Length: 92
Image (cartoon, rainbow, N blue to C red; front, side, top):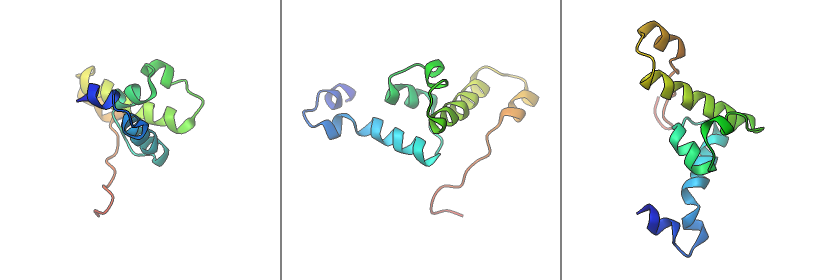
């Protein structure tokens, strides 16, 4: 499916996911580190040094959650890094 989207003749369809991710970053909504890397076409280390402060914040949040979930098995450490849940739009 990704290949079909990547080869689509309409640029709006080819770039829809990257545009979605960039909009999500601009709104300050959390998104996974893999999505950020895919949309911006750079590794997380390069994204973490980007001049755009909202992108750096999104990378820091996504990367800390990713590192906590996969690398740190100590509950006290996970608790220090835990990201507060944000309410979903339209829900209390």
